[in-house]
Image 1 (tube, rainbow, N blue to C red):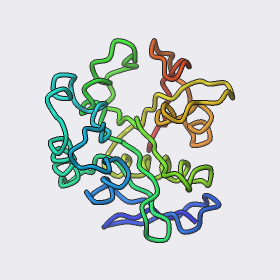
Image 2 (cartoon, rainbow, N blue to C red; image 1 turned 45 degrees about the vertical axis):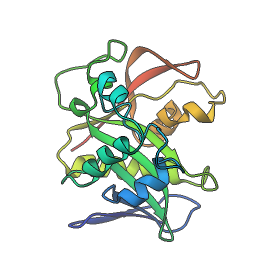
Image 3 (cartoon, helix red, strand yellow; image 1 turned 135 degrees about the vertical axis):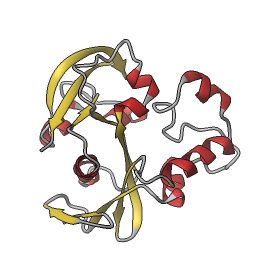
Length: 209
């Protein structure tokens, strides 16, 4: 059973072989660090900021400066994404936010704007080793969509690869695949000029009430 948790609402859906998956807005820096941070705090890693900041901002941040940006993001009223938990421990992350906040996607010449609707983008999915292929991804997508809907999003977009059943390298799997989003109710609305891991990326959408 997957549980969606928020401070003012709750919902349950059938999910996966991992029991008691709970999806929450990402307001915990410690759990974000578990999912995205380096073992050495001084090391420079993405922290899932590369798809949020401009290239100039990205280059200017290193080591703990990147962690400080994440601290600021999780402290806002609307979270930078959602986290999945199994039996109390964090097992997954999905980045979801208004596309307008995601500089590289908003300004991209390779990923088209379909229209002027203020869509939210679901751009990154990560599951911890040891919990993969157990339904965590499906729970994250569902939780991200629910969170975006509660924040007033009219549409959620994703930009997965159309890999046609071929294996996707784990280092590039964070964008997701067409099949996993189709299972979550998304449909393709456009092609892109972007490629990830050797596969073309597409624009998929899920309309929200």
